[in-house]
Image: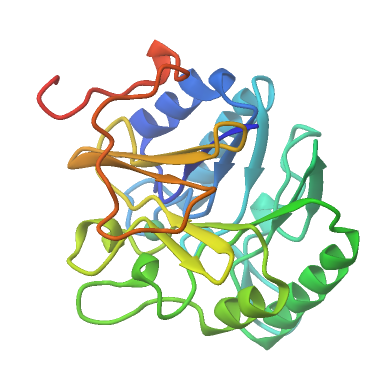
Length: 268
Ligand SMILES: [Fe+2]
């Protein structure tokens, strides 16, 4: 299975176009929250209409999995907690979104909503408990915020991660957690796009302006995860312990199609 992870596109149309144009190179595309941008001059409802059209385009090309981020909240539940109502029932039968789990080959994916209070937080706990009973092979979570006390949630002077998520990871030990939220983590001293909590791999691609977005490519057959950014590219082998500093990716591996390959530094 070859998977593309992006997050925090924040209504960047060039980045959304890039994801659509590269999507059919991947079995699964994960967009881990903050599809919209609350500070945009474009009205939030208009943004959501446009982004849903991108979801429909992606749905025709690949298996799309999404979750909500803190910029995506457009409604409140009965308890007054903010939720991303527009992401529920996204057009396109194959799109997996907040609150859903989905089996793809030997992998179970679980898409968690952004939680804004105890009701949704408890619902995620229930969701993970139910999904854990279904788990037979690989289990991958999609959760906008990365876990607490991880380089993937390091903002340069403190951690911005989710304490509950870290406890859930330690309890259920999923194989991977795909996140975003803390844009600068991969680019700060002591921060990173990758971490390991016990046996769980954690990824946060980070955020940069313009296309392509920072992104992580995970190939479970090749057993590697590759991180691409304007500041350089790195990789980890999924069948080996995480080493720091994370080694640079000197050249894209041969199995990546030319279309997948962003220019390496110096090739732009
Ligand atoms: Fe964000």
